[in-house]
Length: 533
Image 1 (cartoon, rainbow, N blue to C red):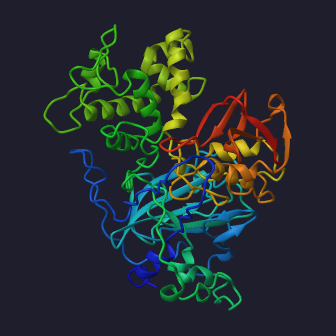
Image 2 (cartoon, one colour; image 1 turned 30 degrees about the horizontal axis):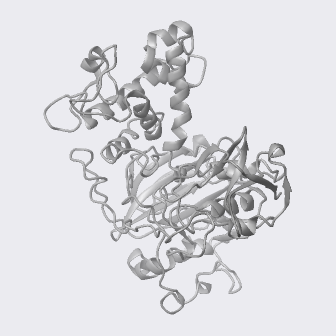
Image 3 (cartoon, rainbow, N blue to C red; image 1 turned 60 degrees about the vertical axis):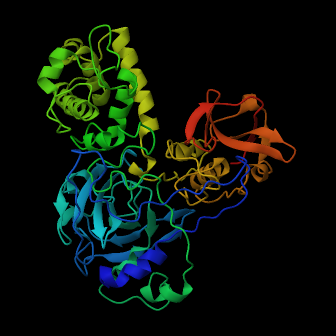
């Protein structure tokens, strides 16, 4: 099937139902998120000079492997208590992985989950499919088996990687996903077999039997059986789509005038991402800019607080207005990114965390870091590094990381780990459930439903509302709460109106209310605890 032939089926089968129910986490009219992510942007934003991005329409989709080199071993849908967002093609380590569509590589390397977790490594390619934004995702490669870099243009059939066995993998295979609306933009995953039936025919070249649940013949008549439903998208007009590193920044966490520049700046080098730069700008001058922006007592100026001597070397006219201005957002943010990338190289080989050392070099100078063989013993610098590294998570798009995968032990503390994967996700009334976010985010009980279900490998499914969840498990004194226990508050005549996940030290991970994001915050007064695992 060609992309043109699949267009109508994609529009319908790629849609996800938004269930609007009664949530106990807030009151008032439900907020249904805007859905602007329907077309590929000609530019990645509206700020002049930030990008000349234009994704050409891709040619027909192709198999992500050479025919007959792999076996289709697992399909799209519920699996092991979670949702399997793609199809698995098993083959020997080193089997070539091919780009399925023409496009731009926006991620290549670590998922940020750590060794042995999730995919561990992945490649994401953003493509223009008849004007619609589509991401294809390729997972479980070894680091040495990735042959593309972010920002690289590829054509369908290009050799982009090799099959590996990294992360939470049951054996060497390619995990392949197809996302309508963009993987990093909070789009909708659909079964790749829907658009590429040949995937299910990789069992030694033989077609699947009619009983095979992944046979394209068993997906039903797309024209007659599918319901017309609203699609789930981010609220951010495909921000960062088709831009290397552009999807790493969480939506709506920085002033609108900074967002396009930060998305572009996150692609200057792979080590310095846009969430880090955003946290740094917050610490430096709290996103203040322009001729009236305050300067530091030492004379540092602009949103990135460049010292005049440093600006002479690193300041450039990135916004194209003919002036190299440290108080200009574009000039300052892009210069900040280039300077940070250079500092990262300057401190390479110094003992310690490379990002923390780079931040220390920005604050105290690379010479001080090299002299002290680490973060200098200056209170200002140590406080600077600590604040920015702590704030970075709040600016990080949860879609830019791989998904949480529970350990076999399914212990209580993994509930916290599962919820933390979505720090920064928008609060959406009625949003979320055991399969993850919906409508672009979570409400309070949607988050707890997902985290408990994921951490228990599907063995514990909570009711949907906070009042109903209060009936599960056993109540324990709040002073004896352990990480992973549920904490309930906002009590009313029908029970608790809010629920979160205790994370330790009198803190909880929760989706607070309309206009907020999933965050880690102090417990509220009057909360009670229950152990559900």
